[in-house]
Image 1 (cartoon, rainbow, N blue to C red):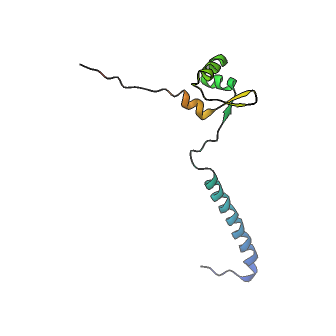
Image 2: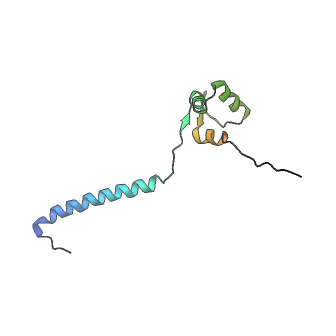
Image 3: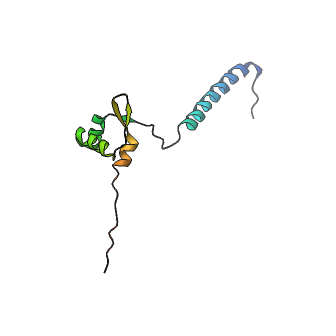
Amino acid sequence: MERIPFDDLPNEVALLRQEIAELKAIVKDKLTTPEGYEPDVTMTPDQVAEYLGCTVQNVHDKKNKGTLPYYKIGRKVFFKKKDVDAATKVKSYKRKFFH
C-alpha cells in the first residue's frame, strides 16, 4: 500500500466518496430490478388487437367469453400484456396411438 501525502488526503477522500456513490447506485439497481423482470404493461383493446394480429371485435369476443382476462377502470377496459401472452399461448399435445 502506498503512502498518501497529507496534502493529497482531501482529493483521495473525494475520489472514495465518488466510488462509493457509484457502487451504491449499482447495488440499488441490482436490488430493485432483478434480471428477467418485466414491468406490467397495460394495453388497450386496440393495442391488443394489433399485438395479436386480429380485430378489436375479436379481442372483445375473447374478453366476453372469459378467455382473455381484463381490467376495468371506470368504463375503460385494459389488458395486461403478460395475461394476454398467457391466454394466447399455444398448447401442444402429443398424439397417442393405440394398436
